[in-house]
Length: 110
Image 1: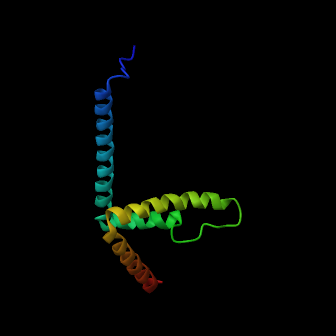
Image 2: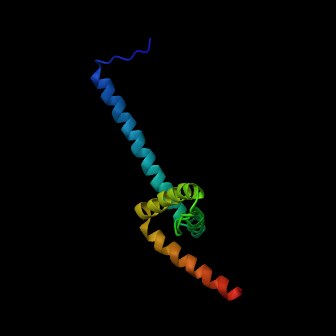
């Protein structure tokens, strides 16, 4: 016997409230983790690299079925980009300037 009573509304409400609290805590933890990652230059460099590899800054269209794969990668990249804009919007401009600075220094050494 499961012990579940469909007429016990109070227990159902308590369980729903507890579940909502856990979900809220998970969202807050994810936001805090992400802010921690992009608070460091190495973390920002990693996130920028992930965005580039995911194809966020280029077209995913190939003219064949590879487009579907590219769109899947791009979708993940767009989710990461949305996290940047939601949780650490200043980090995006910082990542962009650091990326440009890195590109300039690579051009000088080439």
